[in-house]
Image (cartoon, rainbow over all chains, first blue to last red):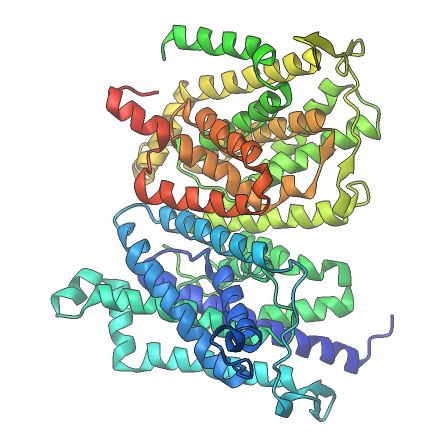
Length: 301
Length: 313
């Protein structure tokens, strides 16, 4: 097969687009893991929930509140969906997760697994598993742009740009601001931070809320590209787990970079040997486990 | 545990097909063995695998393939499936024990996903349809497993039932012997305090891997049994839902108890067959059960009972 620069680049760029989703999701997992020490299995389900908030806000919210002409537009959904899902996250943390911190961390994983089943199950009952299209993509993001070496869909470019902005914004807040220093200190030694008068339980609640809000944000970004379906999250979450194992959850920047890179590798594999593209991330995980068990950016504990 | 309880359980198993719907009973035995094998790892070694469906489902495909396409007798099919699962367990286990705790769970989940993709794409697995119409064949070449006997006017495949029951007893006995052997004591030591076990000179990695392989092989045996009972190996068997279900069974019954997985499997399988009319709401019910278990009774049914009776069950 002739591999033209064009084909390779277009797949790698599409891969980068997927990588942007991996980056946001694994960043959310890493932020949550840092402070709560749990792996949020419900992350995929909340990503799906974010997409549904956008979809239903556009199609069903108006008729529901008696204003049939009202549609929650895309830009509003980008703000509203993370807020709604973040609020759901805060309720989850306050009512359930907070009871588990004194037990083995595996219980957090099991609890959020149960929650993922509930959320996915409820949506499977009301919506089509094969998915519904989200048709609220704004006019301005239609069409393609010339990147010099190729034409690239405007919307996907937007996804890459805004994802990078959100990821690096989060990184900046955590690594470079005073608020972030509280967070990092809370990760290292919550007892000591409490002694300094910082409200750690509140910080934990808000962190979980922010982490899942990121997932919802990714969900809204994904809605115009993929069809919105109840299983979109469970397909995503397992891949993101592999990304997290490869990168190691100890580093914020690590999880962003790993997500982006693996997306591109996946895209590249699609050109070289398409059947392997769905497993390549898992195979890389195997190699990383053999060579550097703690993960690329992980610390040996 | 009390000898009387064992005798009662065996009698119950022998008489069950005359009282209970036998297909239900066989399904229960398959999942009870699966959960018990899983419990060997979670309950006695402290390792949470989120990818055990790979062994259960993988073995059911191999058994199906051996019996259907290679014309092997059922006992050889089960043996083949079990060995395959053990080998797969060796590969997955060697990789997964390089990480601890939460990472261990994620690694096993991700590796199981590879098996899922293979099951979806491999030439002999039938893709989305699964491997259908697996023949039950003749046990040892001369006992027809399809032979039905009239029990109270209903046709019951008693030969198949007792074959499955004997396999279950064999598997359960192996697990029981393992737990109460010196090897099992070391596993418990690792669960309780890994650094201490290391400092006592035990090669912890080796013990973990052996427990993993044993657990995988027996989960495979359960999957092989399932493929003969239902004459089907499907993608559901290798999916993460199944991995989650076996976690639930063990958790619900009682992690680290001998009888817990049996009780958990019984509860979940009953739920599934009683509530089959509600369709996909079953996922929600399973999820709610999970949440309740984790929040309210982490010891599980048998664990709580044991605490009340002040006895290890």
